[in-house]
Length: 332
Ligand SMILES: Nc1ncnc2c1ncn2[C@@H]1O[C@H](COP(=O)(O)OP(=O)(O)O)[C@@H](O)[C@H]1O
Ligand SMILES: [Mg+2]
Image (cartoon, rainbow, N blue to C red; front, side, top):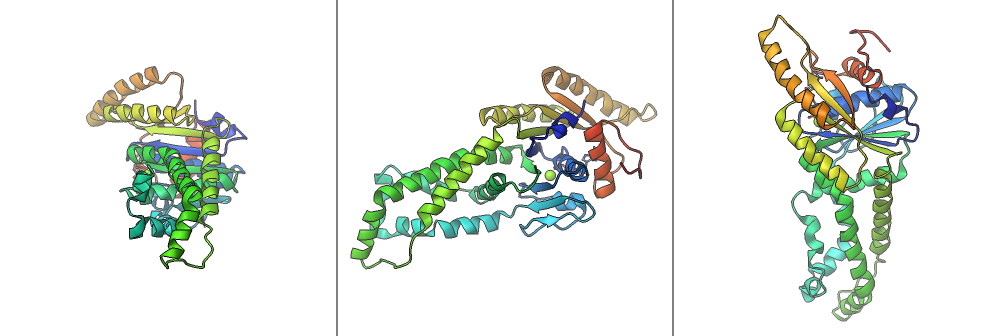
């Protein structure tokens, strides 16, 4: 069994790859993207891992936070999200609010109104998290046939998945604050001689962002349109982390039905070391097959060399999509 049935689904728009660090998320996301692009679907592959390695996997420079065509693959585009850029855009947008909240005459007003936690967004990690609002825009607009996400290691991805909910309530509070007290703030400001003549569009901006979040949530929880593929290797610590990831996917209602088990040691009777590793892995493989019997499992061998650059990614893509590994140098 492979992820073919998933890729065959014509309604599929969003494919997310996630799991522990180093298991092969980027390689499998990039390989799948090449396959779908070369089989007629215009594909965008996005890295949301702040420690980007997507460009490295394609042996291309994808930095800069802009969508770039992947040289050598028709129909394929790549993007490494730049959290700093997204954060700057956010700051500009909410500048009006921040000015008001920070003015000394309004100090303490938010907490008086029970809105004290609106400042949460500047908490550590928020810059990375805000990059996700950029991702949400892509989800809402979706100009591509398929958007593939190469996500960060589990902990960070979980924060990201919970973000629509967090942003939703955060922006909801800001909007309420503006609606209820906007005029009062305005009058106070003019009394205190701080009025500025510039029209304030931040309320519309916030409303727009809230809509974007709501529609992204709907998209991401629709099993016809979205699937989260878990990548793992057959080792104890990874099995435990996969459980946590699955729990969170369930909580956030993100559909997941496929697991890629990567880097499986091949049979090498002549190599004592390989035999020992293989035996260890096979034990966990049995457990995984047992625990996840309602998932489709795709098994990928450990290759003798790293998976990097178009030829090796293309071979991995073919294996993922068809279950057959083409010979080295063979085009499919
Ligand atoms: N099946 C495999 N066989 C051999 N090397 C692999 C395989 N899958 C991934 N790799 C290599 O392992 C390293 C980590 O893979 P990567 O896809 O970057 O993981 P992640 O994105 O989960 O951190 C890379 O050097 C990659 O080339
Ligand atoms: Mg990676």
